[in-house]
Image 1 (cartoon, one colour):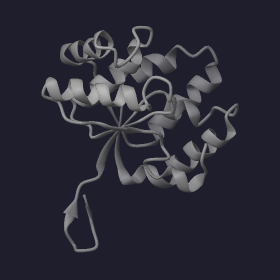
Image 2 (cartoon, one colour):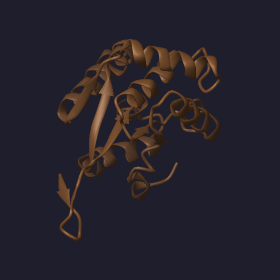
Image 3 (cartoon, helix red, strand yellow):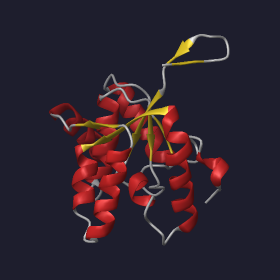
Image 4 (cartoon, helix red, strand yellow):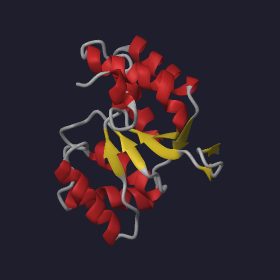
Length: 170
């Protein structure tokens, strides 16, 4: 809990980080994205309750570059991130995202990230995936599906939306 200017207690926003976020911390092939990610973790992450899922860990463990894989896992361990599990409910919701055209069938992990966050009532999701996640059409379809299934709206954006814009723009 924290206090705002009027001494009213407020809760930190819950923010789910898909795999692209901790991965970008060590992706030196995209220097501005890497810089924004690094600065965001150092300065902005404390303003959120952070979450990843078992899907994130599976994706990271698939990395062939052992050094990068170990550094990403160490980053996740360094920050207070809660680990969420996939469930039958999140699997069903992820399948709806795919079957109703919100996420391509070729990207089941993307659908799982969003579904796990939605099922766990996470208000926001950060991703650097502008093709399949951080794009107006998927976001609209995801929130329509969530509403029809009784889940809340989820705010989806890059780290720039969640305070990272002050460190540079892509």
